[in-house]
Amino acid sequence: MGCLPRPGRTGHPPVRTVAARCSTPGPPVGAGAAGRPGIGCRPARLSRAHGLYRHLRKGRNREMSSTVELTKENFDDIVPGPEGKEFVFIDFWAGWCGPCRQFAPVYEKAAERHSDLVFAKVDTEAQQELAAAFGIQSIPTLAIIREGVLVFSQAGALPEAVFEDLIGQARGLDMAEVKRKVAEEQAAGGQA
Image (cartoon, rainbow, N blue to C red; front, top):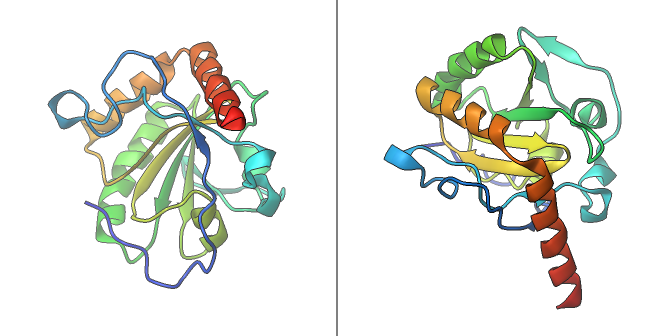
């Protein structure tokens, strides 16, 4: 269970992204086997057309152990766009949130074990505009972005074994299929 952000802190409406069904094997988000979260449902493309990048400018990276502090200033440098081949895990948290503090060591250990991946953290108190852009309603929230596509977003602290399983699922995604589904969804949305 996560913490609700303090009311009235962001002042910005969340930016909604276009969602599409992904046909990758596995249960939908939040309904995985044995209660584990699954990837394979509702990826969303992050693009300039959806307004997310409008508020985010380049800046410098500040390291926090094995993770990177993600801010609106360094977002474009850390999170690859559609042409990028990497993917990024993002932990939205706050210092006053108990479940966030519980999940932090799990997230940090995963970042150390998977040094080939980018693990970023967003302090929702300091980065309210970025949290609002992602529509964060409860913390901690974990988001996964691959090649400019939001492939997973779920609130709640995950146990270590479940998080490792989720990382494996993220690695196994067929991004060509995901992008095809996103393009179909966008085309269908434009015709409606």
